[in-house]
Length: 195
Image (cartoon, rainbow, N blue to C red):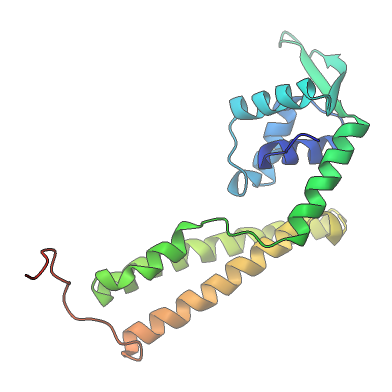
């Protein structure tokens, strides 16, 4: 069974929902904001679709033309594609993987900056996260208004919950830094080693 990268997995998931052409898939990924969890460009998606077709996980099912636009090939998932998707999905749901995010690395080195600067930077991050939370809140209202069942958009609820947890942590850490409850080194460590 071919190993699916996140972009190929996402493409298969969309094609399981409905046959479509790669440009439509790309637009849908942007609307769903999947570009925040999967590194994607139009070109990378087209290459992923080509690999899925080459591996027999999807097949061409139709060709469409709208006006003077070029023909677009519509793809659908094969049984092998569905099996590969299911296998990858089960593995991703069942295991915990360190995905090497940058923020824990940065926060582990934050003591190398003055507390005031850390408060400023964490405050900027908190503002950005609160904007993201507001976007998710709006999306959840729209989803409910469209009558979509929660089970097909669990990723939206999960992403919002993770952002809310980070926002709470950031706000508490900023408060601790401002109040002095969180002790912080004064001054910067020397850049030259002592002999």
